[in-house]
Length: 589
Image 1 (cartoon, one colour):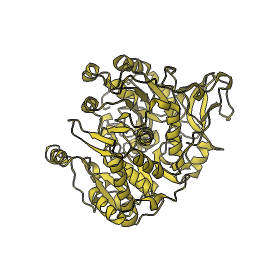
Image 2 (cartoon, rainbow, N blue to C red; image 1 turned 135 degrees about the vertical axis):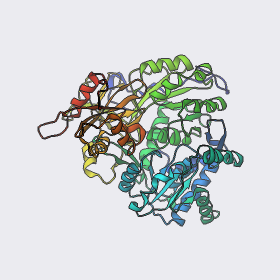
Image 3 (cartoon, helix red, strand yellow; image 1 turned 90 degrees about the horizontal axis):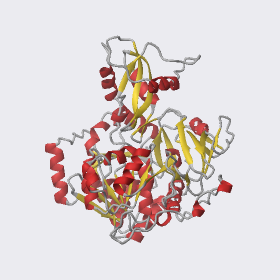
Image 4 (cartoon, rainbow, N blue to C red; image 1 turned 180 degrees about the horizontal axis):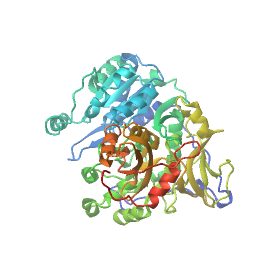
């Protein structure tokens, strides 16, 4: 274990009381006390407690950076809340889409949406126009905040949405003026990365000025002081168990209690006001949103934001220039860093803990990471519908490789058979979760909600085994979700895009193992046009889907296996494709 500038690193871990005992493997400690009635109350309290300490630093690949203190973030968020409510006339509960990468504008805008009493709709800024159209129409967004680098993707979407107001943010927001000027020149003239914006939009800086004028000497408390813990705070879109993208309704209490559950579990491992966490995972992803953004903000932690972790050399200056003590990531990120010579030569000397989530952590990667850094990487488990954390491995040396740990406080996990009956310890079954972090349901989808929430218990769709000591081991996924570097790919969505091609009669999309990304997307296609090639199919998909959803491989077949009622048996397709290597390209393929 490394040493920190503050002296010897204290032991990481939890008291034994936080683990289920052998005699009561189903038992869990009580739900931690949540001292706040809403997320804005927590954010305001953190700002009051930590004030002038640095809350967020954005670090660019060349080492240029900017920062915001807790107080600065809080005041800017108040101004944005006032802009939404007083200037735009939004009402409590209105949905506001936020479409931007990790940058200083993100916490200001996200916290401002919450302080306005509105509902945050996190959105991948790389989404295609079609993907934005589906999500924003479903969420019925009342306003959109988009980063200028990808603003052109909104152009064809806005009319269908009724032309909601748009706020234009920059990656350079809140950077020192000379740094921002240099970056903007590079973006505009060297990279040519700033597309034209042909629709009316308000610059974030102008929105904040107008919001401050509305506030005067007051804060934004009047917009959120009557929020209820059960009010929806965020719509976090997920594939759920059916493959159809839908918004998980996460309440203020869901997110607050999940922060408290994590912090109670890790105990003193997250030292108040003394941790620096490297945030390379996107904040629009629920893992980084809850763990990095909300959890560390609650404890007065310093978030070092990476706008784009690709290539991995983009992390080099951040690790060199900041005393990173915590690192959260996915398997591919840990694996990739351990292949970078600069990282092998100079691993972060202040690192105290590394946490993996979002996808399965490979044992070989965990072993290599500990060899390189001297710090073990421990794995947890969760899903969007649970805000997301359900289980976590202890940080004090009692972690069990190959498992996702034990339930966090206040969480009950059990494995059930197809009839919902609890299976004996050590036998596989569908993992079912009960706890205060479980979502309120899916937005505008009561039937989908009923399918996964039964008497308040969440059917995760994952097959797992719980051992005699309460440790959970994932066996397989019951649902057809494909995980590419921790990101969800929903086969139904990809299949719909493929079958819209005039030369394709049918398609089945499955995930196959991939050493680099965990899984890769493979499409098995029935074509009506014999001249159609795999490259043409991929090009069709690339025009309509974000890059990680585009099939890496296309296999042509005469027929797809179907059930008696004509439903494609994706499980049979997956079994055949994972058992056999990709066939060599043939003429016309």
